[in-house]
Length: 93
Length: 390
Image (tube, rainbow over all chains, first blue to last red; front, side, top):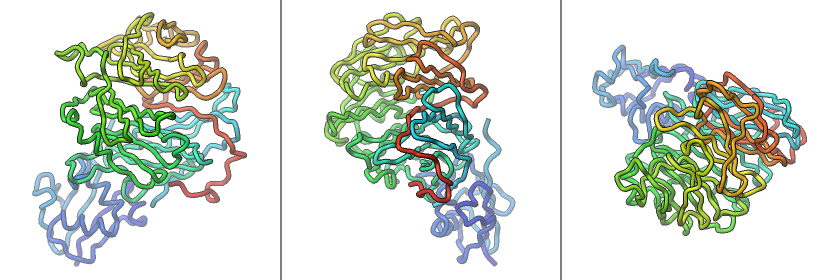
């Protein structure tokens, strides 16, 4: 059982080329999980979060199938086994 | 540190290199010194906007700095030492606001190497308006707290492009002096190496404010000066062209001869401190060339008078815009003058601006242009054998 991050293509160069990262520990919230991720893969976490530790406005994080913007944001609780998907928003021009 | 790979140009000693930032990536163009034919590489950072780009040839470097910004993942500084073959991408972006500021980086608007006698020093201007400095060749950076904590800063207001610090001018004669400009806020100068800053806007009128000649709040679009005469400065304001002969202590209007005193870019000739180029735009809401005629205006007498340069430029139904950093000169004689437009055209003159030709069309909207003559390069070697970028 583990918490797994799905890493989108543009960030895989900062994750050793991996599309999926499993955390060794069992963080209780999304914020904790990003802290753990950031210790091993700072290049990923720093591009998901801004200078103040907030989720960047055009990045969506899904825990299970739910976008955390409509849940508890970084305080969203995690099950011992779950997938966190990092997805770029469909924005641009 | 990750590195991103892209096709590189093969550069030879004496080539002229154009660095072009756009809203969807950066392009490099090279020519020999004749500047008749251009070879292009790019886009570097496809899909990312590049509002700032710079050449650092100090200490025998051949380094290009760029500031790609991803809508999703933020803005960062990247460098290449092989003309775009490999770009450095640090794990943790080099430029970031400290936690205690409560601010977060929105974009990087200016990259400026320090004086030649301080080859490890670089400056970066960002949005929200702030100055960052490196003293180790760009490895580490720190926020200039003197400017960040200035009592005026909370009252600065964003212009159309955002609240950005877009101009950084070193003073080769005074190491402790630095002049910056921010929109809107105006011109600020330090004479003690960045510890304290004073507004330097006396004489610049701001019709859009209740007080028409305030201490600060001016919407300065660009400031330029020749390094051999740093006290003689020229300024393109939201309305008005200005000149200073005392390093910005005072300004006087110098708009005689232009069809509109609104515009964005302003560059000085590489060999004549009194020759300056601007691109007037009809203002204020319709930011296109007056009468649909795209004209560069040049002064040769220190902004006492301005004359149009139109040969080779569209003179009918031109609805285009040139942004504040999208114009540059090279170091040749006669000088090359270059500018890019929001409609994706890149124009070049190789005769001091007397005539113009199209170098590129259908680029993404051009945000910045820089030109340099590359010295001491025999021939670009394969990327894998080259020194790693910073």
